[in-house]
Amino acid sequence: ASQIKTIIAKRPTLNTVSYVDIPFECDAEELHRAIQQGQLINYYQPQVDVRTGEVLGVEALARWLHPEHGLIAPERFVPLAEECGLIGELTVIVLAQALELMQSWHEDDVRLTMAVNVSMESLTSLAFPDWLQEVADDFGVPLPGLVLEVTESRLVKDRLAALDILTRLRIKGVVLSIDDFGTGHSSLAQLRDTPFNELKIDRGFVHDAHADPSLRAIFEASVNMARQLGIRTVAEGVETVEDWTFLRTTACDVAQGYYIAEPMPLTALVAWMEKWQSNRLSLMESSQP
Ligand code: C2E
Ligand code: MG
Ligand code: MG
Ligand code: MG
View 1 (cartoon, protein in one colour):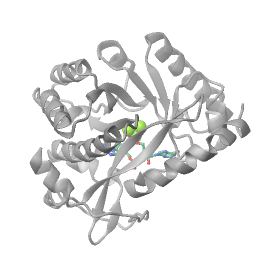
View 2: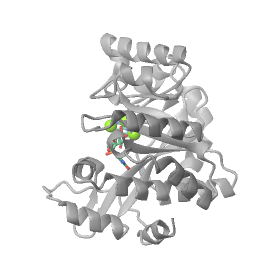
View 3: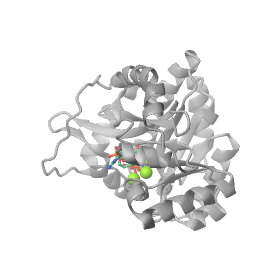
């Protein structure tokens, strides 16, 4: 834990929001160095209660602040990390920053959830749940405030081990969420045989669902299914006021998307929360379905 703290202490403070779009070849060694040098920083995107508009928590999203190239989106380095065995290290560094922020909330008596992304193929060590518990204890953070958003891929070698790890995490009070539900490898089978307690519906079924009967049907069926399973639903990709107003006609619990806020560096989060809180009631009033 102290080694992780040394790494995250190296992070620069950051206000920039522009991304590199130049073609950029990154290799495993460079990514490994970047992780060790604290170039991986978390952005945070708020999640709000569909019924009240209250902020419930945030999702941590990794960014690579490259000294020459600028800000690099995770789609450009997470797959690489998965391929070359660096995903465990990446998860550790994202988690450590998330726990550090949770620690400051805990000290200020702020009750928000923190969601962190983990790919199922990075769940290979049976020691991970106890390690996580130790680090959380070290930060003085209760694990039930932590949500792990799990994505599944073809790369999962030992599915039974991953399920064992998820079960151990669940027992410790960690909330387990199926990310990108409805796409790729997130499937109904996961709901049947895994201990998930949150369903995060992919933005492909959220944005513009109000205008498309088939998207709408899939979205509403997913929400109803989750209800019957007794698990909460989060809609990602709430991009427009129409998306938001539609959501408020459904039984979906939580909303996340550009309409509410884009992912932002920690330095911007507190100001955003204050602004959102002061506009919340009039926003809820004006967007009534
Ligand atoms: P995700 O977990 O599904 O995260 C949501 C992505 O959708 C984020 O992209 C976010 O910026 C974007 N998004 C949010 N609201 C909207 C919206 O209203 N419209 C649209 N079009 N997009 C929206 P981001 O940050 O680029 O992350 C992309 C993916 O990279 C994530 O998808 C996640 O799968 C992966 N990722 C990010 N950080 C990590 C990490 O620390 N570990 C792992 N394993 N994967 C990560
Ligand atoms: Mg996610
Ligand atoms: Mg997602
Ligand atoms: Mg995604």
